Length: 366
Image 1: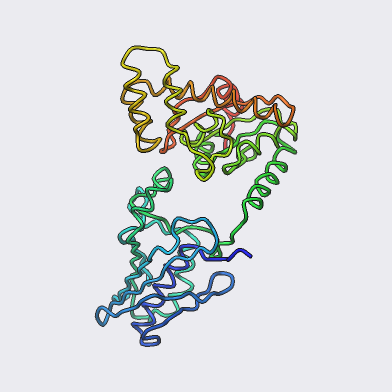
Image 2: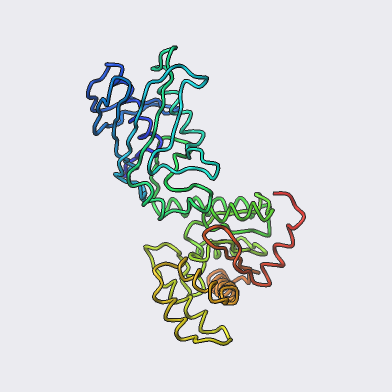
């Protein structure tokens, strides 16, 4: 049976509560802390706790997301807490090293996480004091480079977000079935759909004014979802995604998980080889193949002044491959268009069909 774990905010709050109890003299060296999870409760292990001075303490937890595939597994989370004189806000939350900040400079601590801090810490704050809590994640900045946080304005680290304290693991089959169920519900009332690849796809869809009612998230199962759309007799699908994901479809890879296949740079190099123009094309192809990431290759192509042409070719090829795939396995010819954007959500290219499909919602509020 899959093991249930907890989301990142739970461990940040547990460390903070351990440090506060240590200062208050209730638990000099707690091995675990009971937390209210809103709803429910949990006992969270504490790795270390120490008093810095009579007003300050530090405690450490380690993230345990259970059997979920989570890059924060076992990452240390420190909570530095300090008493101060009473202020307007009794609880002050700060971003230390490795915890992200918004573009406005605020700590990337979102609604559920703030509620969790308040529920578990406010009862321990005396009426004549305020408590400052600074969350530090020594590995946070490095881990954040492997996420899409920067595309959503979360800078320099990870965020404390989520709507629940429980990280409930789902099997691959469960995930796919959940996506298919949502697709079926949406297709029952909407013949023209937008497949949003990842959360950044949904963000771009909203910015483009595409109604939420037609948006469908797909995860990595583009092939299975396209076949399902064909079986449901959907009229059209707009593929909306980050170029590093959608480029795989141009090479005939219809599961975009990194655990299944890669080939992104090779496919991008093949698209480049088909773009006419001046310059040492062979040298450019070699530079693309030598790039460390798809993002680095995209930036290089932009610097060379050929990025738009390459990604236009890629978008057209993605649509062609997707149409053929859906026809082969669902025996239905879908109208499919493709729009690709970069890591920051900036549109790189769209094929003519995508332009036609987007025009359907040009004057509709999201």
